[in-house]
Amino acid sequence: MTPLRWVWAALAVWGAIHPMWWFVAWFQENTWSIMAMVDAWHANAATSGLVWDLTIAAVTLTVWVVAEVAVRRNWIALLAIPATFCIGVSCGLPLYLFLRSKPVR
Image (cartoon, rainbow, N blue to C red; front, side):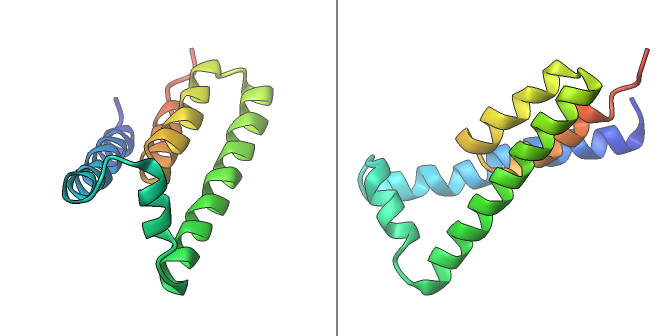
């Protein structure tokens, strides 16, 4: 594995664990309600802006993944889509770059 692939893998793991740490902490302090968390994301204009920024980035990443998978036929790269929407862009993007950079045989 190349050093850059190690970087992508490490960033994907970090992007999965670190945000989830904060989400779980929030759920433990508040309720285990997704809708309560969504309400918290829109508590003010700054957090709403961040939510929209990440939503647009997630949709853009999804379009990119689908477009490249259609050309490259690297089907495993589709795993980046559920990672993006179930975990976050911080995991989905480096995961996609990791899967995209695998050596061609």
